[in-house]
Image (cartoon, helix red, strand yellow):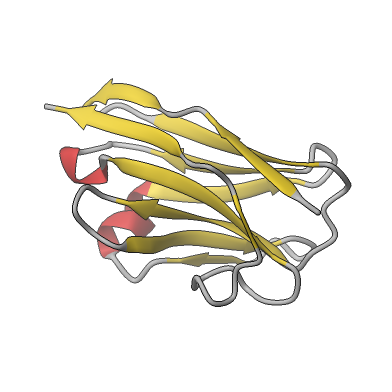
Length: 125
């Protein structure tokens, strides 16, 4: 069983940056991919970004604003995936969830096998 533990959330002013981290604990992650979803207030959870664990290929939500400001990366030795978020705005306020998939790209809820508990990101103007 893989446990995903997120960190790095917080409250920031619009225009600032945050880096979220997600450590896969319990055993060395050997699945296919890890990623990030978010759930904004009053909305459904949505895909943000994913990365294949061995090759490092990245996937992002279609939103231009996500692609231009967010970067996903991973450190295999640390069993950790990161989400660098720059130039944050109030629309980025959400609970951010780490996700992992054993055999697919973690870009949909259906493809995701493991979830973290989430970390709150609040952006104020």
